Image: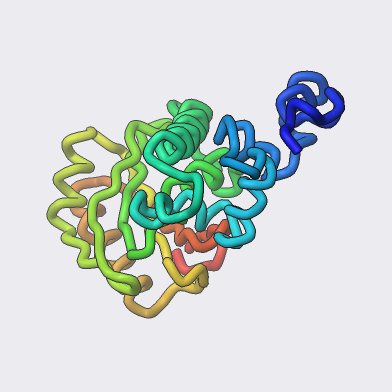
Length: 224
């Protein structure tokens, strides 16, 4: 049945406007982003099919265009709409963290890092560069690796820290497996970078590992 034939109070767009976006299911929110369905299938049904095939929103947003466009009724326009929505969400989280003092348990910071790091199928190493008041100057992804390894070059980390005139740094990398337990090489890298940055009077405050919708802190684990 076409959504226009539904009772007004059941239509996703009207419910969003009246009751708020938080009252809608993932399929209903996705249906609004898609805009319309395909022949014989309304946007909500199409959204449900997509989500059932991808198993999660994470998998949906991580899809390449080639994979995405193989699904019936999906093409370049809908792919662009979803990617634009994802990027707007990331930028919203970025606004919430800019010039904000870092607190290890800060939910905004954690949400921001998870949004930026969780979808990669390979390891990515990044840094949060902070000023003397522990406010974020810049978040930069510096190195890209394989599914379980990233080559990190300390000289480049030091160079970027000096470029930003950072007083301190927080190290960040992801585990594509979703398991956030630090490896021995993670611990060794943390110590190596801590020592290298200490030589130029820049402190390493923490090292975050991002997994599948979770994040751990070396400080909170007692590893720093």
